[in-house]
Image (cartoon, rainbow over all chains, first blue to last red; front, side, top):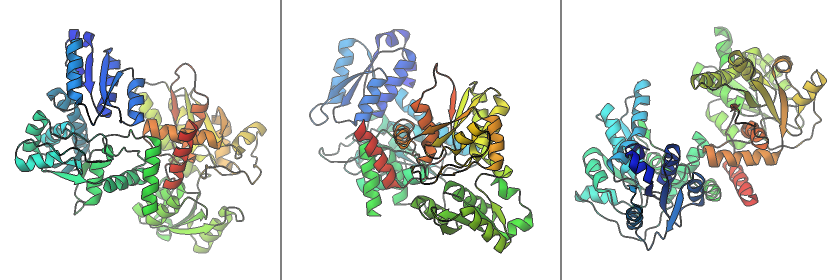
Length: 271
Length: 271
């Protein structure tokens, strides 16, 4: 929304091209509909059906690509150039980071209103835009807040990059149920922010994420998709001591009903 | 909470006895814990495990009874008399109706703040306390609002009572997945309010309720128990025409994970 609002009238009239594993696709499609902008969105062919269906239902043109063989960014850039339209990347753009940061601002203001001293914040991390924006926003109000990015095991590119002091790419081929957190490399802009702002990057495995999804369903009455439950999984796995005031970002609930039901059943059977 | 706050200091020190199919039990248990009051709660032995577990976890003493053979109210009254403590009935008490009505007040104020003219409201109905309280509250702000009680098929005692102009009891033995909406007779106080305030009572069957639960999971990202989804089921079954501004009360999400997963799978398979 923020990126589209920042476009000129001419740019908006021409339309936009975005690329996304799913939730950014819906966000762009909805913002485009609200503003009367044509949107084409490059999405992986193995994205959850619910994400493809909802993006199309919002009026966007969906262009599928093969996640294993093709480079989505190259496809999107080519398409944008051919059509002469603006690109809406999923994370590595200052307007996107700022827009995603409004979530952190809302959380910080709610904490302030309730007189809660926010000591830590956990945020799911793919390319790092959401956590970068949230860190900037939350630390503007709570300068001592420790902000953690949470990555799925096998896609710990931010952890590796923070350790190396420069951007690193993880080896291809890892499997995770977190379909929205599969970026293999941090963004250039997001990493510049995150290396300065974050307290660290944590990893969770599929079983942690499944348990967090079941916990959210039972206790929060919320349907979370795997990627959306990653930060909660990190907190449940290693609960903060001494009842510290901790924020947790739940970043999506677009999971196919069958898959969600399977997760609930598998956790229920194991407990 | 409202009933416990209205007790005298001596009454609170003595403790309370409540009876409930489940969610009222948790509400009483939590309010009692907050106020330091001992609570014993008479619950059906076939209540969902999650409701029994959560009520006990909140520190209440749970007294089980057989829904098919025993009269829970008689058990609760006897227990309250033996112990010399106050009774917290699930619906037929003015303090309970007023407390449940705060939900309607919140909804009405939200509508006012958003400049929405609330034209209708749908509320799940068992003994009729929630819908009575909500009707009184909402109509204090929107006098023309049409308030509908929604009952599960087979437990349409309010519909029958409204038609007869006096309280009627439904025949025993009907089956419904709405475990929290099985009151066979309207309350005396709740019926006196509802016959004056309601626009009508609607019925939904199990399949309507299952579809509403799946709809809420996919579109609202909310976990609803069958009883909690009854009003939504009525609205989805017969959507209001002309984009009228309609309120829907979702009154609970305490459903066993396995059962919830089965509902999602059955609806997904049928669609």
